[in-house]
Image 1 (cartoon, rainbow, N blue to C red):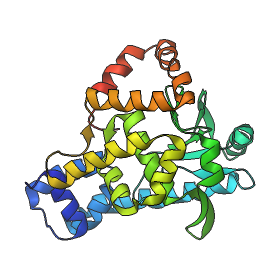
Image 2 (image 1 turned 90 degrees about the vertical axis):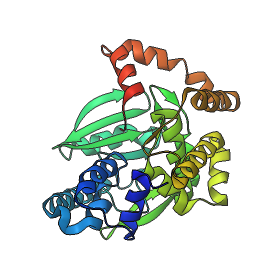
Image 3 (image 1 turned 180 degrees about the horizontal axis):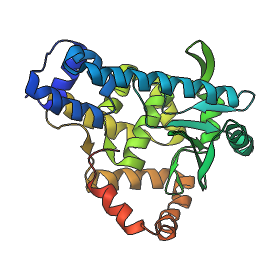
Image 4 (image 1 turned 180 degrees about the vertical axis):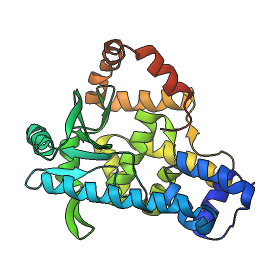
Length: 289
């Protein structure tokens, strides 16, 4: 079965050339799966002006990343959900930072012209000229913690090169575990980008990180969905069904006391928002994020 997702994969790999009618449809699928830049590079002249705009956005994104990293120099941090097997333009920059360094990190970025737009437990969001930085003390959603940020910084960070600058980022093993946990516990959607991360970097070390953070269930779900995607049984983005989510949440809550203790915060989070009910409906019906 040749789904749109498989055609997108083959296009990016250079073994399939979509016709004029398919380019637009595949472009939308690529955008939803956070693979728009690799897709545009693959189709080249078919979307030349769009490719030039996306390349410019990519350079702008990297310039901002380097400036943020320079501002955080001397602090205990790591770029999070950043390393990917293909170059892409992210909608924001996620950074793990040690709890004790969070305020200093925020002040450093404000000193570079950023402004604080959201301040929540475990997360601080800053923005400058359309560039968004999310500072996390722990990977979380709706005030519920699903991985320990301190442990990730302690055992799963390393130096990598970005545009000639040495920056700290999560290891590839950790990025697979993080991608799985983020897709399952927070977003409830598996992207083709998540599958590329797993297919490229899955190994014994991933299971070690997953066990340390009690997210083995999320990794299992990710691999199951990605197998279905590769076989052509489902398209990506793929929304996880209620039974899959219930199983994953129950397994996580049973084995992780911090997750279990912070789960009630989800209700507080929803009640604290003016658009809480609307936000829930949107989350349950969206195609991507």
